[in-house]
Amino acid sequence: MGKQLKDLTFEQWLTHVFDHPVEPFKQEWYWDMDRDWWEEDTWDTVQFLTQAFENAAAALAPYSDAQLNQGLWFLASNACSSHMFALMNESIPWEARRRCVLSMHQLFEQCFARRCSPHLSHIDEPGANPLNLVCYMWWDILPIGGAPTDHKRRDFDEAILQVMESTLQLDSIPCRESALHGLGHWQPQYPERVGQIIDRFSMHQPHLPEKLQ
Image (cartoon, rainbow, N blue to C red; front, side):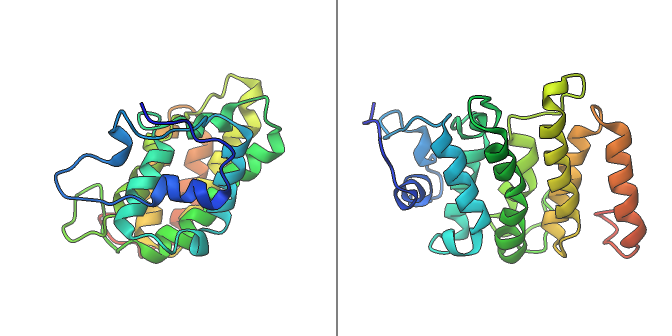
């Protein structure tokens, strides 16, 4: 096992997450059992995620689309890391966690909307940018689902739904596809709320590509 990383700066954390080669037919860096690691379910994680997402255009600019796909998958999926569990850690103040959730809109607006190619991932359109994959799968691989019967989760779930709804307003096929994908996963828990979001969106977007419709 690699060494535990401690007292990382934001820039060092970005390097830890994103500054790795992406090579065909080789597994991603984070599957290496000897890789360096750090404690992920923490206040620092929430702060770093928020800073990266709110300033995605500048913070993620040094990395290739393939590196971003690899690193963002590492952040989002609990098969790869525990970063997103920090958003559920009630020892961290709610306002900090809420800001982090809402900052995901900036990730879509400043990164995915600008760098993804206009391909649909749910039908595997050929020629897509490597970043399209994690954009499409973001809400699917995030280890967070709706919990309408848990009153403690009401504000948290609403923040997630707000981000998916705001992402639908971006003039980006991949971002809209991602939001619709996520809303599909949340529809069983929030059928009325999700229905309202999609109805409002459809009313104002009558000329969507047929395959996205």
